[in-house]
Length: 149
Image 1 (cartoon, rainbow, N blue to C red):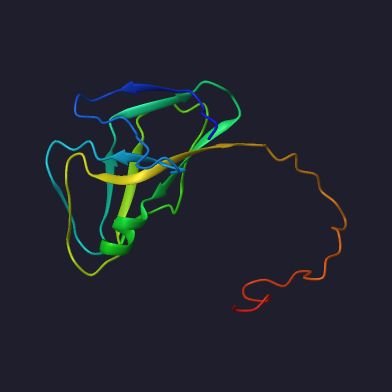
Image 2 (cartoon, rainbow, N blue to C red):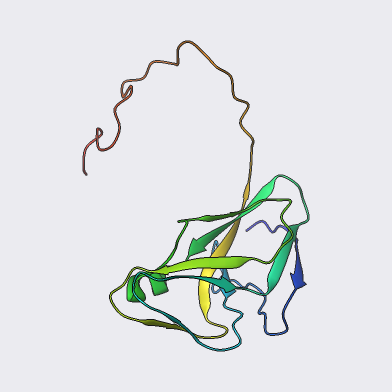
């Protein structure tokens, strides 16, 4: 895989560097930088610090934060915003905005891998107002218009 150099600033002594759990992993795991375990009740939200700030070595990239599938499947742990977007020019701490979608209390442990970061190239849209848009077979059909399976 192609590698993008990323500068990391450690903001808290307990912070763990992101790491790839396998050779083919697209996302690098992000860990909770908590002084002690945190309790997350069903339906409750929490902001969990990672203790890290990031800077890509090349412009034109964003860091996308995704939930890890293991905690999502096993415990119902999700990101409140679905996918976190870390803009190229953001230099603050990366925090994980989590929600407990499960039915049981979740205990978040210090150092626990809770999310993953993926770096993607970004192109900005150049928006123009038009009278008409191109014609397609689908047209304006949405919300299930292409079938269920």
